[in-house]
Image 1 (tube, one colour):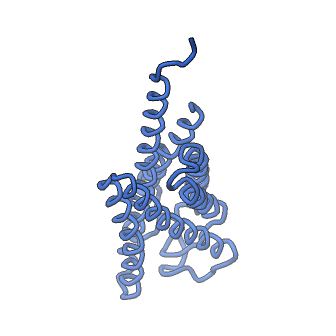
Image 2: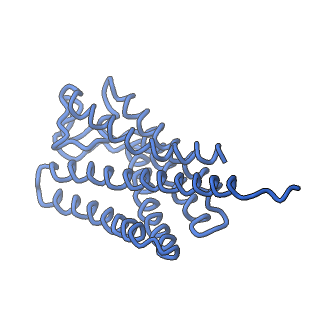
Image 3: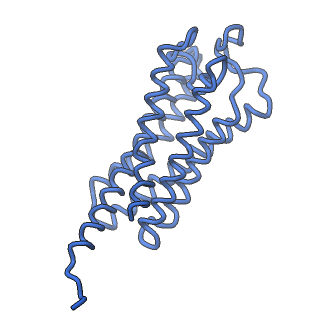
Length: 228
């Protein structure tokens, strides 16, 4: 049980860690402007290894969270698809870290000022990793909305459902605004909002499941022994 709680704690740490490191880099990286440059570009340049590590470590923490979720919930409600989707989410982040995006939007210095034009294999795989992240996270929201609804946890069911609707809405809105020639600023800021909402929800879920696990352990240890 201690191992399970430790694995669930990995998920609680992952979201805040990712967001904090992105924000620090946003405002300390020379020549980087978070208002118009997507956070994936932080993986480029001399200090790009920091964001690469951020993607990979955060992804591995969420994979560990998925293992803890499996141990805590299986074979109950959400105990099969929940861990699988959370594991896919973490794996997608690792892929997005290992394979870097192409230069664009004016970063690094000398890069095209618009959408990356030199989109090689690494850029394509980075995009594929992001696709896995988004789809698996949205699906996980609805899996847990159903779980909490079945348990009578209305607030959590609503939170999960609203998050599951908000994530694709934010992504679609970012694409619409970008296509309308907003100089990529809405795209950049909305994708940061996407990470804040999605990663934040996953970490809040980890906190909630860890509390459930702790409560179950406390209840088990408080039961009277049948041993004479």
